[in-house]
Length: 69
Image (tube, rainbow, N blue to C red; front, side):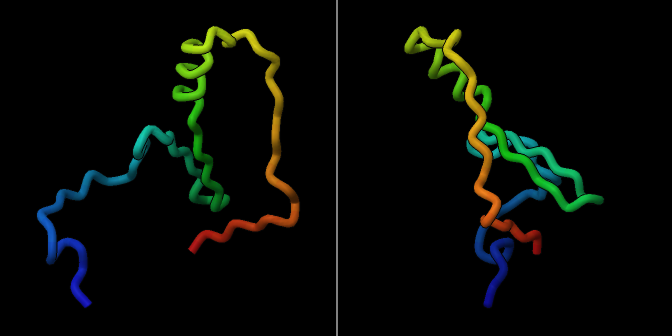
């Protein structure tokens, strides 16, 4: 099986900080990763003029486990 680099012209841009508008933060030592769409959400709230709406936290259910491979 060919690698992507053999099939397409590519550059290694190192660790991604933002991909498709999603900001990426990671703690490699603790094997944690955080994804954020905060800037997009703020823009949508401004468009609909509800940027002062009440903030609600929606945590991921405890039975979901994400693995780092």
